Image 1 (cartoon, one colour):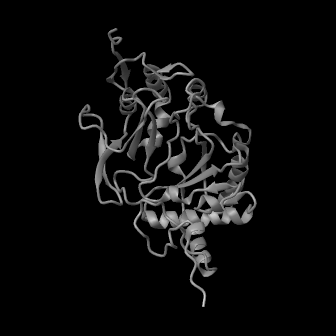
Image 2 (cartoon, helix red, strand yellow; image 1 turned 60 degrees about the horizontal axis):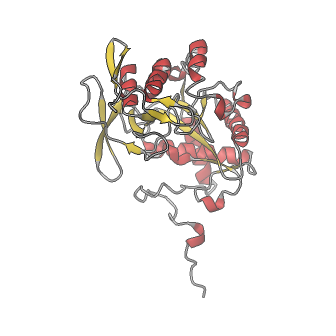
Image 3 (cartoon, one colour; image 1 turned 90 degrees about the horizontal axis):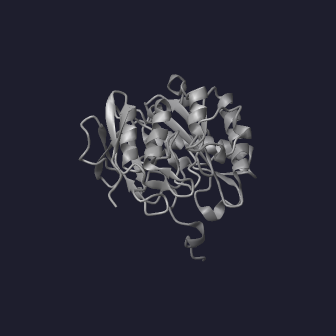
Length: 339
């Protein structure tokens, strides 16, 4: 049978073509490629704010979420002239031209490629080497739950308020919670990551039986991990309003701090978010206006170092970093010979 005719959507004065619009991407929920495009159109203001001028990596599922995915860093060379890109380099020294969203049509264009979720950098194209966002990734480990993640988020919120930070929570759309703080783009990635590590350690001090900053999984136990390495260069997380490749098509949903204790990941899906967005708009609309002073956390870094708490391991794909402890799983570390 021939593919159904393409559909053209009018998006901000541009016509965006959606080919094979009836192709089912979420079999359990029945959502099609056209549904995905229309979802992103319904939250256009929010998704553009989340991605605006950020290098963005794309997770595509051309044959639906039950088939193979393509994690795509490079934006296709064959694209409309109005689809923008920004060049970035990786720790390997290689480079890529990544999607750089500035308008809704570019998001809908990506949805036509079966991009389910968008993974932006915490920096913008004007200065990709200096992040303007500190990311606190609250990641429940096996044996812990989303409810535990919410308990940790409350401790995170308390600590941030004490230092005068305005922070913005969202569900990850899966098991965890993400909290973002805008910062001045003055510091390079290693400095911002080190500040995130100092903050995570402070939360761990406040809730040691609930929180861990241990990089090695064997050391975490049944605690909630705060992944400081999400602030390392070239590490990304799903953006606000991104759909997640789950059977129920959850989305990474911005929420208010007052809402957070009562929400569940499954409350926010492709089917339910459009109505919420139509009623409330983007609850993170003020995120770019609340810039936090990273120097407060850099004082915590100095405090930690005075107390003998230095660097922690980087992800395995990074070159050895200054001050980093041995990057070897503790159970495999060789013991020094005695005598």
